[in-house]
Length: 173
Image 1: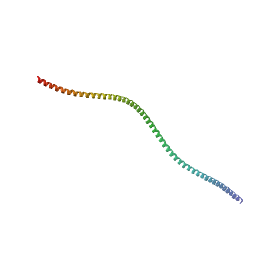
Image 2 (image 1 turned 30 degrees about the horizontal axis):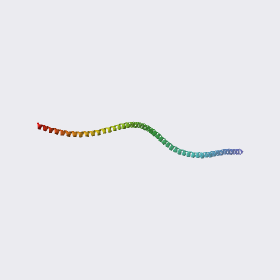
Image 3 (image 1 turned 180 degrees about the vertical axis):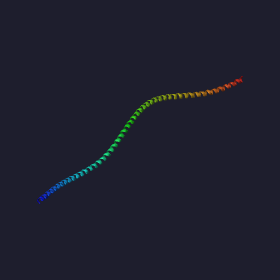
Image 4 (image 1 turned 120 degrees about the vertical axis):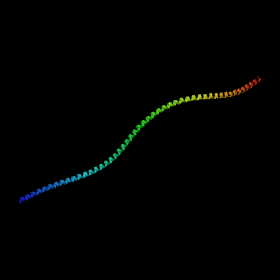
């Protein structure tokens, strides 16, 4: 009986040790479960924080995308303005060249105008002289016409006298 009692006691002690071991394992497992739960809570919080950060990053990316598009349009506009300025500079240079050419032409035309005015002045003086000569000649012509008429009348009178004289001579003869 004693043997049996010892065996039972040994068995009880083994079972108690096994139970204590299992309880210790259970305690460890519960500690690990609590630790994992705490870790899960921490990871969940970290996940939520990361989700918020991701959302903020998406918003920032959207803003950055808008800003990038804006800057791209500004760059395109700047490039367009630079190109337009190059064209305007080219056109300005061409206009300056044309203006210089026109200034030379104007100077040449002014010189030609001065020469033409001088020639015109000379021609006007000559025209005045010719007009005066013409007036003088017109007066002389009028005098010659009058003299011609007088001579024509005298001729008529002389012819008449000659015929009359011829008629008298014929009668006398």
